[in-house]
Length: 478
Image (cartoon, rainbow, N blue to C red; front, side):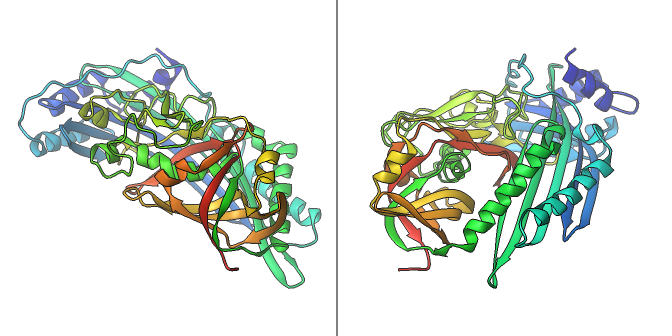
């Protein structure tokens, strides 16, 4: 038995838990006549500590355990869940599903092949050191930030962690499990100079322990990055408005790729013909040189999973290859209905949610240009280094993103920082406007959370610096 299954055995099948043999019979009865389905078991510990103005403002700890039972028949999905992990509760859920679904007969699909190698150590970060140690770190961050720059008037810091254990059981008795740590550290500051106040921040995280983020060299670097961003904003001028070339920085700016393009390549939107990319498989949808992959196999990354929430090992799925659409992000249900393979992207927020196709780490691969060459090629444009957030309409592909850190480009040189810049465009159209792709690929620091249909899951993004022509920049200066 694997280490993950051994931990799951103790949490889900010990005293007062579920007998796997009895559970398999209940699952088989609930799934009779279905195309697919599974029992998803989850145990989760989570905590969060936040500091503001030198004081701990909130501290929380939560433990939850429950199950979700799903039967899939054609395009329909039947789901029952409970926080009571007992055989009577499972029996009631099975009866609910049997009563709700159609009596049409089908054959339950075989479970995914197992054997995925763990991508992260299954340690529990919440148990690795006393709670007081983590709280003390936030107080130390506050003092350090105020001492580092006299203009700092406010410091906010938070540290969050969770330990999730999941097990997926199928009607044939197959069991797979995963043990998932996740931590995150955030630092933000407000600075004031000559009556003007601006903020800056930095955060990072991943599927690892707290230890690496509590090393002074790391968190002090996070403080200095937050101060640097706030300092830049204190000297910023009003952003221009109009159509112009935009150079996007490496790493976190890949969030534009995630939102404007990635969601449109999820299987459910394409199967239902609601994506701007529907029906374009095999067609050129991006400029030559553009290759985009969704990779859930990167060790210790926030968006990575050893197995997805249906039990399928995650994979590196090529979505766009040299500008050609070659793949979609798939869970089991949509892959079956589209006659494609499941890619290990069936994800859910918790046992109370049904899985759907979701991104893991969505990245654009390197090109050959340098950042210097891209900047030099722009007469007048925008250099967007960091983003605060954005939104996209999946059907039309239209997006709006706010730049958290951006600079004017004038005569091939980086100029003044600007505030209030937004990027406005259309995902499919923007892909064709990529003119230069850099050789400096970077991943984001590990802070992304993706929302879809009311569910939030951790994700990652990454890209090299790239130049796009003719994007609309919304700002405050003509």
